[in-house]
Image (cartoon, rainbow, N blue to C red; front, side, top):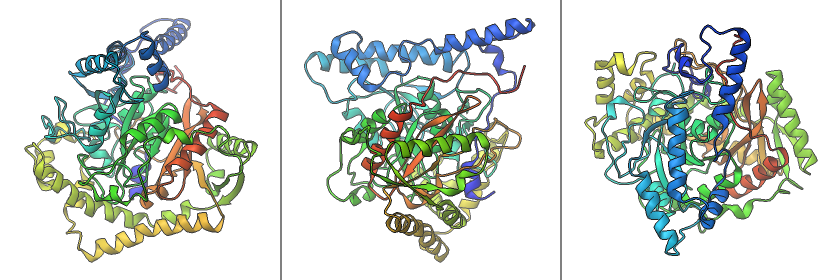
Length: 545
């Protein structure tokens, strides 16, 4: 399976087929009418949460008025996690809770009473992906049993930014193990440490990955915002599958230091939220120049710290948007949503131009695979060498997995790890040529934008969530739009476009480097005109019962 197919497939996971016995609509031996009534009652019960669909702004108003404190809000989210992540439908989005979350919230409440407000994230609980270092009691494992017990010596740069902004680090989220760079037949959302994350919209459906737990947690209202990471689709795809907003920034806007790496060329962290406004707030808090990540010094001018200035409900008026032509064919339900989104762009005053970007970028896929394998080996060895973990090299990781195959590799193996280990250094001619080819994706996008005088290019983010299938692994459902911006290192945002059979589909905008503000403007205008985000229903399965 090539890298595009490997990343684009949905997730599979380690829960047994009978796990729905703990769900609130346990069918037992009841009659068909009882089954229907219990299913509906269960859905309502899990949707009944006082902070459902709340925003950063609404939580700030509650804390400012004294209606709720940060501690109270944090307690509510912890209870919510206990009720539907650890019990009930068992989303399994959170891999570990922060034992200091309440004390952090209390300290921030005291600061507020003393008149110190750090900014819009002051007192706001945030979940982060378990491949991001935190210098606290939480582990950083990338979902791997090989790193169980590993506690980082210092915060990742973006976590330092997050703490300085006054956020409450609620816990860490599950992910596709090693950010989905372990096997060519992997199950997204599954890790040997964390098990399988489920899609809160339909529990037997994939969350995609690798930021699976962050997407599911935001969608299921386990937090108000979360942080994910992406190499190729790992923020955008799970956000689309779970019906939320995901923003992958230009590589270099956010520091990667302290994040378990795959690719220095394509890796980035990014915000995941239920609204474009909340994603914009979190992005501004995380951005900054880090001497330990030279890519952050490439920003042309002063780093923007307030992206909410781009929130404009009329932001589509007068814009020229390229429409990915290939997505006008495919699954009829998804194509119908896409055509309605295109009509909405026109109604909001945008001029549309059909373009064909995906075909050109797909031809570069094999070169991307080589780049990732070379960079993964170099980056992971460098990370492990300084980590407080027993595993110090990629070779030792492979050896650990083989020795613990029953627990680490019960469903799929480690072909990606093994292939990466065979690669040489970054001075290899094969690598430098592959990198040159991969980076030519920037020329393709830039030329398309310049020739057609475009403000952005739009398309369906990814297809419908596939079913969880531990036997066969992930499979494609089409419409994959993540690769162009990922290979180029350019920004990409996805916004809910609607649902097909209760399964979400996202609508994407991409553009050139450092144009996050423009993407936020377009996405916000689309969001406000469509309002497609809706509560997940925790439907057990699409199979009639």
